[in-house]
Length: 179
Figure 1 (cartoon, rainbow, N blue to C red):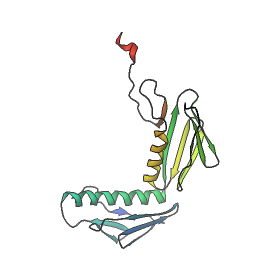
Figure 2 (spheres, helix red, strand yellow):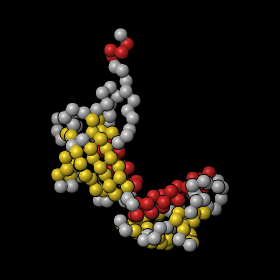
Figure 3 (cartoon, rainbow, N blue to C red):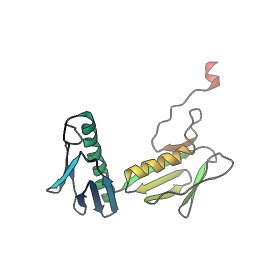
Figure 4 (cartoon, rainbow, N blue to C red):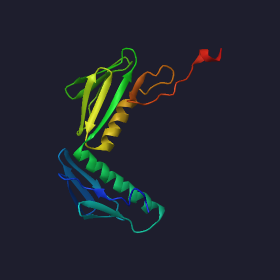
């Protein structure tokens, strides 16, 4: 059995889950999320828990079993506590500014980069060199953080660019190291 898939998803108090026609709706204090499931994976609700079952032991069913259990667990965590991702901006003169809901980045190009976050993602800029993303959808937070990081990925020589908080950048020595 899948180690992830065989664990039930425990539904905390204050969260309601409904399963109908291959859709799982999770509603909690922070919002509501919906996930479609594969037709082969069955979901049932018992005693405040969601239990995922698969029809066979083939590789595809094993993979889907753990996948959908993890996605629903992330949804339950999102509607109860939410998710946060922080990006750090490294470089002389590199900075971020929030104008209304629009993020404006000065990251070494001849023009500022303007980014409008999608619905469901709240951006804050506590300092000009850090960006904090908040939301209930873990997948959406991760993809928006990756999109912002892609505007100027950290380069290996000086480490300048946008990086995740705590990310280790592998540094290269440069041309003078060979002498």
